[in-house]
Image (cartoon, rainbow, N blue to C red; front, side):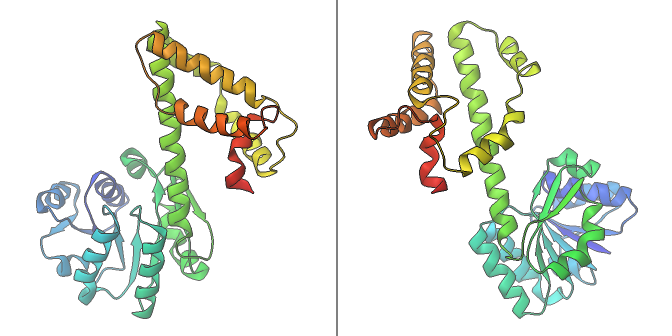
Length: 281
């Protein structure tokens, strides 16, 4: 029997998938109605947190943040005696502290954050990460691999998966903000959003990412493929066009300001990615 705590969009989808695979699942949520909604799927809902986790082979957690995880696990502690698997996006520092605390208590704590939406959780697709004790991870691997399309071990430090999750989410936020700026500029230029989005039908910037990232890591910006001064000129054109069309951009002004700093330092003829120097040197 598996216990699942936290019946938000992700947790409830995980539970539905577990039930479809024939797993016995007991569920709990701060708002009891969300747990009761899973009874239609064959899960057993509990109002009593201690009863929900009592006797569980594994206890999975999908909550909101560090404080919620610590609060719920502390309240459930009298009934906990098996593995804890936390899928919550939490801070690296909080995760490290939590892993150490539960290790002292003799209970295996596995942080396993995900790059998954509700549909991924339901379909068993997407990515799940784990870090910390490798033996514990390997023991849990058969069960966790059924919950995701790709299960990745990212290192011995218990907080490493939490850090990797933040890196990935940072990139997603930055990427989508780039999309928002692109659509704002398209609007200012009178280009329909549907036409702007069609750019990605034949232009795939994702294909450039691995090589570009490796190039940045070399920290050699003296062989430019796009000179900083030319990239700054393009940023100026974007900003001017957006302003002329009555729009505004949010990401590009910050990038342009960094470009100006590095041009002032004499790096105008370097590759534009020289602005990443503080991060790679």
